[in-house]
Length: 385
Image 1 (spheres, rainbow, N blue to C red):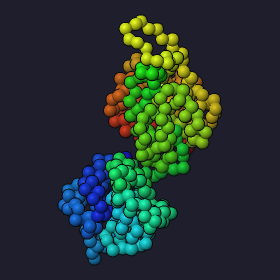
Image 2 (cartoon, helix red, strand yellow; image 1 turned 90 degrees about the vertical axis):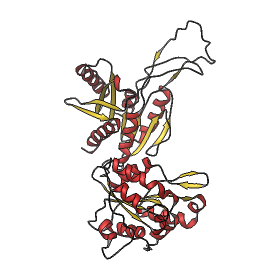
Image 3 (cartoon, rainbow, N blue to C red; image 1 turned 30 degrees about the vertical axis):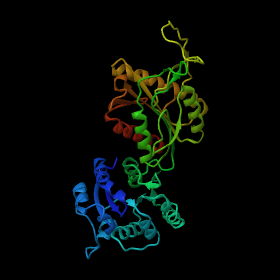
Image 4 (cartoon, rainbow, N blue to C red; image 1 turned 180 degrees about the vertical axis):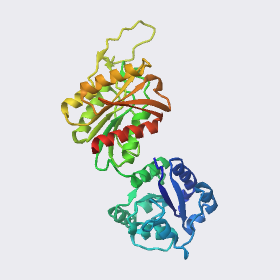
């Protein structure tokens, strides 16, 4: 996600500074090189050696005649993005007022003047986060195109965002934003059809690939709507659904102003009239199944020009048969391309997929995060050609 990106990590004196060692590790796991800058207050919470170990680079703890702030964040500086995590109320106010009395605020002023992307992850007590001056400072910085990773409000505190959210917003700020301004709707995971108030018919889909596509679209600058039977996520507006009908309704509403649809969900092909009360066990039971509407066909009929990416899962284990079925779906719904895979990868951490177009087939294999990136890059090519 951050391959080849240089991140300057500015650490201020919040207790959340203790989390920066793992944050630095996660940035590096995602491909970034990291160099840290610390305030005096931050050094009272976490020793610079800890961040030196985590980043494998020396730490800037003061601005000297070597003009470290310019070398890191100036014109043609080392960093591609300045990440302030955690950022205290004190640091936010100083940056908004161009006050440079710590290495972190001096780097921030330099980065903003040089046009470098800046990402801020605030952390403080909730009353401080609600202070009118802090609110004004945030609004000022946002007007300068500074990106904020919203804190988690709990226990009277504005706690620093999760590492996932911080890394993702850093990737979004530092990337080429090829999907900037695009609204992408992604469906993910399984749907469930109620048999009675207790039991459902469902399938083995985990939703990992769909969520990976949604995350990759966000990292490339898109506004993402994720339709799934799952939790809220930091990278998308979530429409939570359970049944195939609910998913269809949510997607129809979301695609009214969408630029693309990625239909990655394993939507149930059949539904049943649910019993109003729990069906008692120990008896023979026959269910009368009825087919559900095809989501991509319905959306295609309503939006003839909308780019749609379909997914096709098969159980034959034969690539030629899988490609044939994928092309049938491709032609029937006039799709941009189809992502075909074998059912054996459902629920697994890794996957192998075939991206099937009218004339070409490309193979991709790797983690589902990597597959999400491949699919998103292919979608971006469709939207930007």
